[in-house]
Length: 509
Image 1: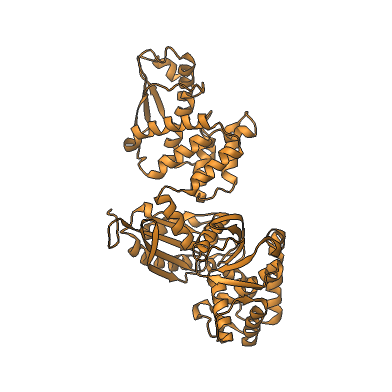
Image 2 (image 1 turned 60 degrees about the vertical axis):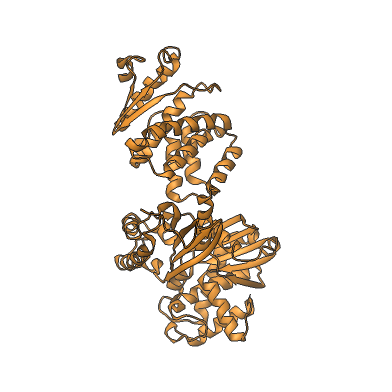
């Protein structure tokens, strides 16, 4: 696949896709020396959240409607390299139980992989997008984003989110539950606001008025509310509680979504606007907000700037790994040595084992650096502690799938391979095997370098070759490798050691 470039030397096209619960957004931009120029935007109201039933299964008609949209997006994206495209799914794709088949079809339609991200990762990216779209006046900001299936609250300064929360309520879900029959009555609206206030109460202390200087709103509900108020007032205006009450009264006066006719309220947003407005009113009341400014920057812009960081090797995932190493008192030097050996082994087998994706090397390196994270809990079974920690904690920058893969590799880096916790993807198993070998060869934790170790891998067979007499001089390593060979038989991997260096019968064990 060729690299899509813009009209000039050193320009690259980047694309971000937000598969939200209400809208799908595609943003294509041209990057030149770190500067971003938007080239194309596409938005479609997919209303994915409407397709979830009471068992959180995505209905076929809604899935088909969404896939038709993604086919159109895919036409725009197919000329771009994978590393220059980031596509994420949010609340509905997090909640749906039967989502794997849909994701497979979505990736085929788009021509690129789809990441399902956690709520807090979504919040971090929203803040990044908002902070790049407004002037940095050095104050502490509250950023609010009401999506189709979730609402994000973020506190931060400059370009860094300091506190993030994601609450599972959005304009689509609230509208469906409280205004599902289309009627809009005062009692219904009060109930919707009360329910939203109840959901927000556990987070009120963290995000209350004393903890921030300015309130910023993002995404459709809030942008629409500001536009409606500006039309009502005849000038551009901030969002206020009184203003929101005026919009609420106009909706109640209409009495039904089919009768709503408010200047500044787009027709495609009408069905989900009452629920979104109820959530926004609850946020103002619960957090003590007096005024809020809306901005067009949101998740898709945050994705773009996060992607730009990865392209220029400022990957926030590196910061997440560094923070974990510090927080859990990991031996950095030992982790670095294991990482270097694991990546050196990967370089020798990448082609034969199909491990050529740049993300493979990244994940292997991070797993090597973090493989002892569980020791901060207890040495006994520390690989299990480490896997659990990495599976359940918030890791900024990591998709849910990448986080699970990292956790799986750390869980599987020693002792019996946890086949009962699978199934593992083939590339995850192979990366784990390389990590296990690197850990075994660095068991003595010595600082002097190892000799060159040659490795060949073909299908389910791995061969290691050592310099003459080296294994004979390291009998503990020889014993560890024999044990490792026995462990790997449970995943049908045959580990062979140069016959001149190690007796075949000891390998067979």
